[in-house]
Image (tube, rainbow, N blue to C red):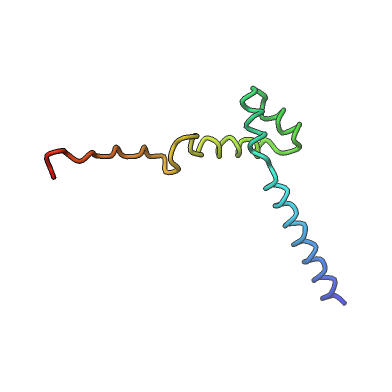
Length: 89
C-alpha cells in the first residue's frame, strides 16, 4: 500500500512538472514584441498576458539575437561574386 501511494505521488509530481514547463513554452513572443514596440513596459505586458516579466525579457533577448529580415541566418553578409575576366578565355 505504501509503495502504491509513493508511486502515485511520484506520478503526480511528474505531471505537475510537465504542465508547468508547457505553460512556460506557450508565450507568444511575436505579440510580446509588438507590445514592446508600442512602448509598453515589461510589467504591463506581463500583467496583460498573464506571464512573468522574465518571459518578456526572454522574448526581448531572443528577438535581439534573431537575424533581421533580409539578412542571412549566419549573420554574415554574402560574399560578392567575382565576375570572370573577359580576356581569361
